[in-house]
Length: 233
Picture (cartoon, rainbow, N blue to C red):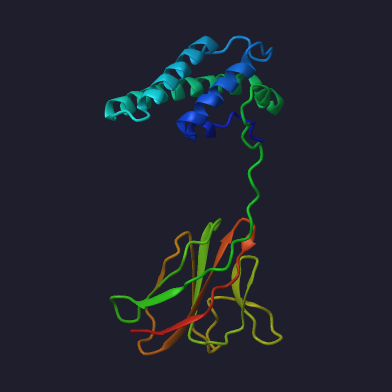
């Protein structure tokens, strides 16, 4: 299991809140028995934050030179705080209580569980440059690891997905993994890839094809997109 670390989200704070945040961390670490020998002395951080506050005040209503001086001071303070955060992470060794005793926020120790992807939206089909070629695309689905695209010349093909595979259910017979055996009177292809885009070639020009997609990840299969049709070029 991953160990908790100090979150560095505070680096994204704007200048005024960052100044207060750093002063608070100096206060939390002063006399803290968990962190007695900081890699960056607290006095050094105090000097740096004082410098940033001075230059921040000068930049209010000042010109480009004052703003550049503020930015340089902020960058220097950020570097010191990254180093201090690394020290707290090292000494805490994954102990969230110790991290928070210094006032820092701990990172998650467990990854956020993945959710089954949402329905694929805005499936589009268009002709490729070659005869019998159809190109497909769709919107990005958050959390998807890949997309499966299915194309068939049978609008009512009794297709399902079982254990991650597309299968054809013919009446009471057993599911038939695709590609469908000769004699089932159905043309069907499918493509599973990390890309939202999929292309199909070798189709019969002038034939209408029906297509849909679904997204998938480690949790399983998302809902099918709406079925879209196009006549192959």
